[in-house]
Image (cartoon, rainbow, N blue to C red):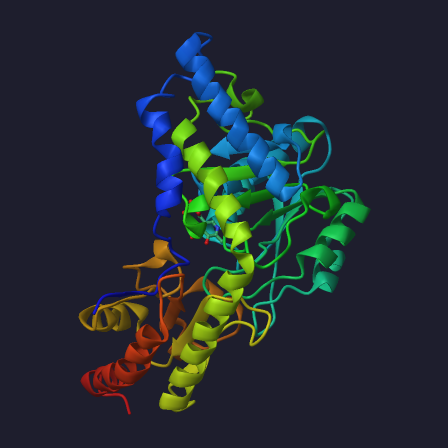
Length: 388
Ligand SMILES: Cc1ncc(COP(=O)(O)O)c(C=O)c1O
């Protein structure tokens, strides 16, 4: 049996998405910046995709920028907003949280360490939630940007971004949210939400890898991170990948149309998994990480005491189960998880992150295979490591 339980890392591409992309490799292959027939055909596809995405998120087409991945959208949000704020004298201070994805955290650290910006990194509670009151307390007259993710990749916790966005905007700063894990966690209505900058990555919802969707509210200046041609209004130079933009739009359309079944199907499997594993192993060995209820519908995450995520992943792989220790980028990395440290777990737990994220193709049988086999694999690891 081969079971894929790593949908937070990436998802298989929906055949309907592939079908929508195909003509843009074989027929509409022109450079969308070229003025001839082939270029115009590609441009038409690109702009239809942009309009579709804008319509689905209730944004304006000119507010949607295509990037090369989700990380690039996060980088462009932080560096672009902070460099622009410095240039226009709108502040030097950035606020973010301890559990952001590395695409945000490392960019914030680079802005602090290499570009002399001031950065406040607010903590989270034991479930990984940012308290809006902590953001309020961290705001300063020179705060230009606050960046808080909509939902966490490692532990699945959904953040109170609407409350945070409101108080950030009332203060006169910009609010960015990395929603790369969170397509299904909110009803995205960007024109009516307190968000200035926002990112999605279609490969998390059955779209292609290698494309990011970056929303910049009209009127906000983003200093480009790349220099080159004038594509994407000069905000993201480089020949736009038309097939991937078309695939991004199709994936978003399908995902939103399937929202209700996605939630019901995934939540049922997620809860079966959480109940099964917590019931099969003692509380001194396993704990659920992340919020018990305010969590992503497809996301089950645990910490195992005295074990490393890598050891568990190897054993799960031998059982035919593809899982993760918390984030795709951390795979192969024996360092403690910064997210598990941020929620206050002690050293015995912070290397033992295990993330099982379900998807459309998973069944109750897949979940039962995990529940029936994982506990004995863990017991073996404990015996091998001479713990318990
Ligand atoms: C919350 C979050 N932000 C950013 C990223 C980076 O996205 P990409 O891999 O498309 O660059 C990920 C990927 O896992 C993520 O989960």
